[in-house]
Structure formats: C-alpha cells, structure tokens
Amino acid sequence: MKQSARLLPALRAALLAASLLALSACSPPKTPPPLPPLVEQGLISKAAATVRAMRANEATAAIGGLLPKAKGALVFPRIADAALVFGGASGDGVLTVRGADGQWSAPAFYRFTAANAGLVIGATENQVVMLVMDEATARRFSGMTLDLGGSVRQIDGNRLKQHEATLNQAIDGIVTFTLGDGFWAGLTAQAAYVSPKEDALRRLYGENATVKDVLFKGGWPRPEQAGPLYEALGPAAPEEALKTPQ
Image (cartoon, rainbow, N blue to C red):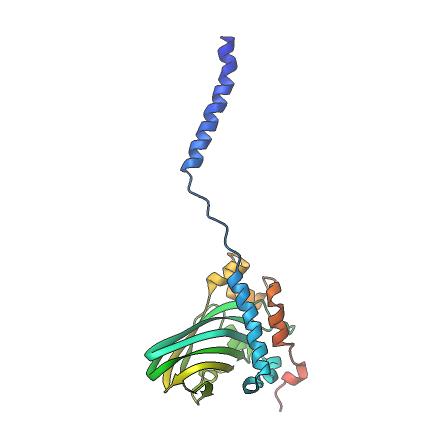
C-alpha cells in the first residue's frame, strides 16, 4: 500500500507530461518571424541615388532650387512602362514630408500605377521625383489613393519631353521631374494613380504603423537607412526665403 502511494505522484507527473505533449502536437504551428524589410531598406537607398542623379543631371538640375522650399518629396527610383497600343506603368517609391522644424519625416511607401492607350509601341524605364510644394497637398497623400489625372507625353528617342498636360498640373502644388531611358514612339493618354503601401509600412515600422502617424505625427523614428536620402534632399530654405513676395 505504501509502495502504491509512492508511485502515485510519479504516475500523475507522467500523465501530465503526456497530456502536454498531446496538446502541443494538436496546436497550430507558430507563424514564422517576418523577414527583415530588405526590400524597403533598398528602396530608400535607391531613392537617395535618384535624387542625387537628378541634381547632377543638366536636364533636371532645377530640382536643386525647389527642394529647399518643398514640403514633401515622393521619389520613384524606377517606373517601368511598356505598351503595344495598350499598356501600363508601375513602380514603387518613398514619400517623406518636411515637419515644422524643417526636418524630413520617416519615409512612407507608395505605388505608382498607370494605364496607357494610344498609337504607341515601345518601353521605357523612368526615374520620377514629385515635389510637393504646400502642406495641404502633402496631407492629401496620407492614407488615400490619389488620381493624378490624365497626362499626354511623347518620348523622342531617349529624351523625355513633357507636354502641356503633365503630372505637375494634375494636382496643384506638385512639380514633377523625370529622367527617362528607353524607346517610345507616338502619343499616349495615361490614367495615373499613387497609392500608399500599408504592408510595406508595417514591415518596416511594425503592425501599428499608419501613413499619417509616420509622416505627420513623428510616431516612429527615422530609419538609419534614410540618412543618405535626407542628405540628398537637403535642408529647408531659411524662413525669409519661403515668404511670398508682396
């Protein structure tokens, strides 16, 4: 009888261990940890290279005079465009806005998409920087898809020529700089949109990150990888230079 009493705690422990093992076998597998946001970090680095290239290129050097006054900069390092009568364009980019202290915000991520229609055949790869020149327009980018309106353009050989109906006229307060490379013949009418990429934002900053918080509320620290981008965009102009002449 005493021997049975001594064996009882051991039996209970064995049964408990067996139960826990069975429960763990039945439980769903754990979700693997998210991959490091290498794509987003690389996109930020490419955005910095795009701004530097535009500052150095004679065709887009005017960007250097506007950047100190800009309230935001939306940079697309690569927009691929192809068509055979009908086609489209797409590319990923980053947006950073300037705070009241003149510092650039942590970057948010955006997708550019467009549809082409016209008598065209060809393909291009373009670098695009959209400078947002007033705060009201910058805030329109926070969490919504923006219709950039129609644009008509012609590419003669490798040189991009902007016509009257261009993206910087589609939304007041935006000036667009483009470096094109490729072949395109003919005229195209383009419906273009810019949409925030919430999934990319959460990968870099966490599940609770929102475009509005990252851009306008300073809720997330600026990533180390964005340093070269801020350097390429440069500081704000002195306050007196921002005043509108009377």
